[in-house]
Image 1 (spheres, rainbow, N blue to C red):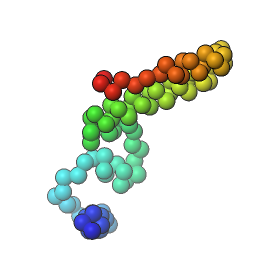
Image 2: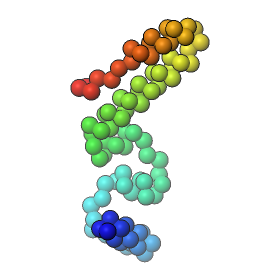
Image 3: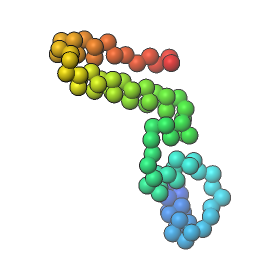
Image 4: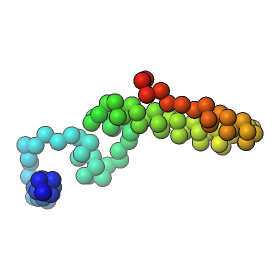
Length: 90
């Protein structure tokens, strides 16, 4: 109920072009205004979460790179993909 009310208040203030003295994260406004948001932007909210998500994205990119390498046999691709790990304690 409180989130619905907050959404209505913010929505009304946007429509009326009124300023609210409400400290909201800039990432929130980027989402509301449908501006491009990237994983790096998560640092504005939670630095640890951003680092984790960026590391996972790097793993996905490495996996795709291995899968698309035509010079590797399927057995070697499988082995290289199985070796991919994420160190949580980075």
